[in-house]
Length: 524
Image 1 (tube, rainbow, N blue to C red):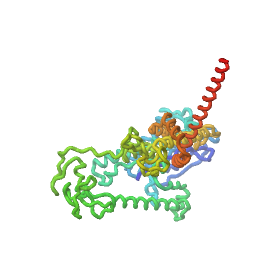
Image 2: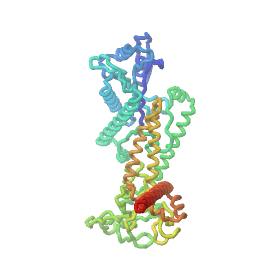
Image 3: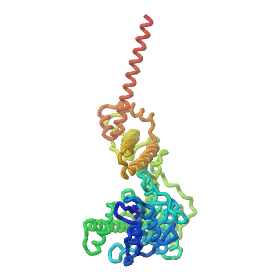
Image 4: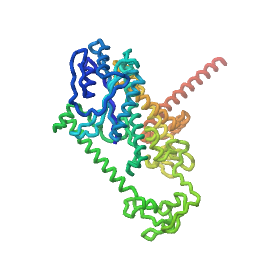
């Protein structure tokens, strides 16, 4: 499984750091800092597999000493760095090419120069898949002749830095997925993939959180270098122990999911004959290959749901047992169990609903009866009729109240959008502006757009709200209480509309009475 990790950080004198020392450590080199006279010797360091410069023709020591000499302040930011995880599925050559292309993309966007180092994982620990790269670049632009220019302030400005960091993380995700897909296609053409790998397709990385991806469990803790060093010596820290527990829990969940999938998946022979084993817990019997065949209990299989009818559902007719199947018969259209009535949510089946946007896919499908009226799924509402007829009557009435359900869902979404707008306004006016505020603004806007699409799919109009208010006006108190219990948001909106209608009617009657009084006075 490919793992995504991309972190952007700065190297600042304020923290007591030096770009020369950082470059020496990451490259396993011996470099002298001309500004301070310190010599940083990390030649005994192991694990540095590849190193190179980009946007610079000279030596690494010259590059970073020039970068240090260009800064005068004691708290200057002298370099920036991106630490990225390399997919273990890629070969060494593919990893090097991936880092080179990403470094070139940074050069083209910011006009900077820098160096990168590819590090291998430590073989003495459990992190044997921790292939990663350190990419350092200058805080100033560097032209083709090697002359340093102005500072790149896009990553220093609080209003634009998070946008640039998000762009770097997104570009690393895209680059990794492209490299994984290219490597998978090359290995498949060369016959180097197993059958499971072919069916699984190329691996992918995802920069979203586990919650956004729909994965269970909390994310692992990021261990500091000191915690990793202690773990290598056999000292287990609290965060490292929690990571081990979460890894064991994930493996157990994955193993259980695979066992369930294996028990529910029919074999190739069973699929060929249109049935499954008799011992399967779904209660099916293995078909004999013909529509007129018989199950082991002696009963004929002729209903639409029997395994023996699988060839007809595929568009052909079954031949004799063991013989070839005929596919010359016309294919029948399957009967539609639900009519969507133009609702994109209702007309989408389970497979298509899974591909809808998150909030839209969560909306229950709205079915329709023979008269074309929209109604909710029967399992989601009580059998009593809420509006119309006598209270509690269940004769031929439809369960629930379809219009109240749609108005309730629309009102609930409207309230959520209003609350998100308030949070976004608070984040926009916050001082100082923090990363959490920018994240609230960004994701709040996306959620509001999603709510707008969902409300458009519901299609509730003002005329329908007025119709519901007129219907609720004629209900008994018991019916109103039952409606408020089932659809609280619709009840609140409807009662507010009734009050507005009553106030408007009262103003109209008073105006008419006043006009009649004035007219009568003139007649006298």
